[in-house]
Image 1 (cartoon, one colour):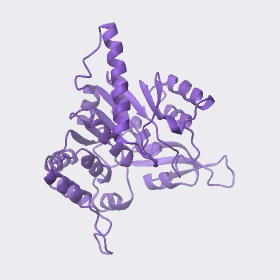
Image 2: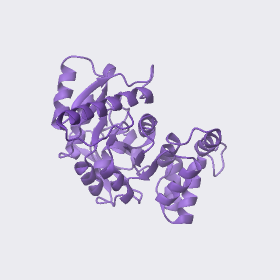
Image 3: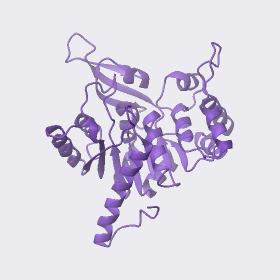
Image 4: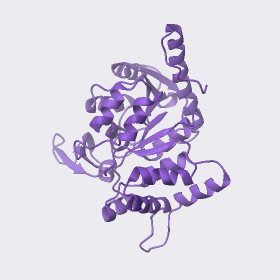
Length: 327
């Protein structure tokens, strides 16, 4: 199973898919330029480690010793000195990358310490930047301004129209491409739409791998629009902007929290938008009670249902791969 994304959204997805399989690969965005990750990136030129660290923590072992290590890796220094705000795991990953000369090797080494069930990989082996066309920042609402940086895009008071990666044709992480091509299930989202989800389809080789994999592809929508980059977005609008950035992208299922999209015309519009991706929209309860976060246990059930439906269809046709041996 492969999960693509970044930040807290990817953490939720990984916490869900690890309930279904121990063969999990996280493919993580590498454009963060804020906080501890941004500082290490600017000072050392390393791939921003924060989202990678969180993914490792989501897949870490459950033994007491590994949990102590996970807590330490996630620990953030306080105070007002040079280390204030840095997480221990970010510093370890930055140091391992400098010593080994390779971020993938560094992730694998720290993963062994944490007894990670699966693998964590960067989307690209080099740090990337996000650039966006944003309207609503000038007196004339028709005029767009170009802004650069993940933090700037995520917090803009304007309306994001389109995003690009810099460099425009970045290399993909080769083991990540292999994982996508060999997967039985690929999950994209939830997460910051313009800065954690869409960037995956903007890396040319990764985009091609997503187009040609035989895996079941599931897109998980956010529970609500985020202040800043997707303020005011409907669920349908999330699909529309993804299609604008990758017109040929296809998925099999779009998982939508039932409470976030009321029955009636809004669901009908969303189903039509999902159909343009070749997908079936599934309206299910995936929210953690009283929050705007996905519940890993509920999301795992939703993904398992998607897999079961494909297995049933394949069995009826007699031509499917055995993709649900863990069920």
